[in-house]
Length: 187
Length: 214
Ligand SMILES: [Zn+2]
Ligand SMILES: [Zn+2]
Image (cartoon, rainbow over all chains, first blue to last red; front, side):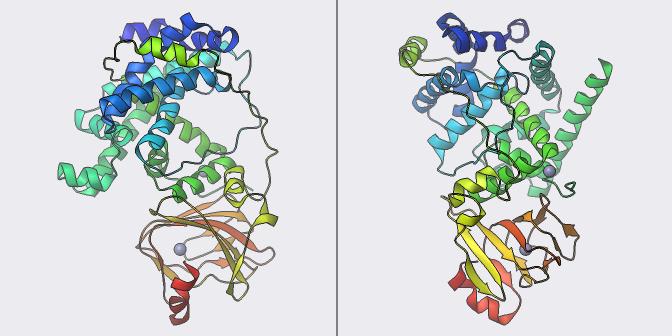
């Protein structure tokens, strides 16, 4: 699966959806991302039926909003995450999440290839750095994203004091940041 | 002027994960509208979400792709919206709640020239409001029962901690008691999100508290 992720230019597929309403490209995106969105939603507490329905919604939104995808700023995985997160808010809780003001420049029709590559690389490097974290730290980071759980609920469930959870997350973020810096200066 | 007080990693991560009450989300979205530095950090937390989502997978139901393909059949693709001109006192997400710019705010007097406007939010986790403090005037001395985020949108204030100007965010919790005072010159307008009610230390404001919903 990792090799698959490295070889596929997901942004190029989104551009084919955007420019040609290309269903073959869409199907390839669906096969990769829909199961991941579904897994994400199930880990967030959705039933399988709800997660299946929402994963289809998220992919339909990807089709609909293909023109809003800014490949210079985010990888497709990151963009899919933001759509899935918003769908989860609608499905599992009522609180709204206002977005920041639109940047004065929107997505470019012909984005700079180097920047597009860079955005996808960043997600892959982050994924690699995440998998190298000590298990306890990685689990907390993932639960912070998956779990519809506040830190105090994680504390109650794991029996760890809130301060320990916060410092573990802080430590994990420091390690990730350090690994990203090292990679950035090696290039 | 350069923004000096920023959002914490903890808040940016919770915003990325959509774990916060709406009122906090609003203050964070407003700060990100003014601060390129935190916007870049916020995008890094979205990228971490992308890496997390890449990490686990499961089986889709039979016929899932076909069902989705028939749903998108004939679906219109969204146009790229035209960005609003930036630089208004109220950033775009705040304007959404107010229903317009500064002139549309429905202020209510708190006395001594201080005014507030409560912004309606959907969940009860925290409340959001705009505060108007005349130049040189003080907010009532108060403590907090939970987290409080204060974002300066116009003018500046000082309190026991530091000076806060446009774009600066002050993060206060139940260990903080402070008396923000607006600087001379321009009235200070802030967006404030509060978890739990504020604890006023002077007798009078405490009596007035339920009435004004602070
Ligand atoms: Zn900032
Ligand atoms: Zn305060």
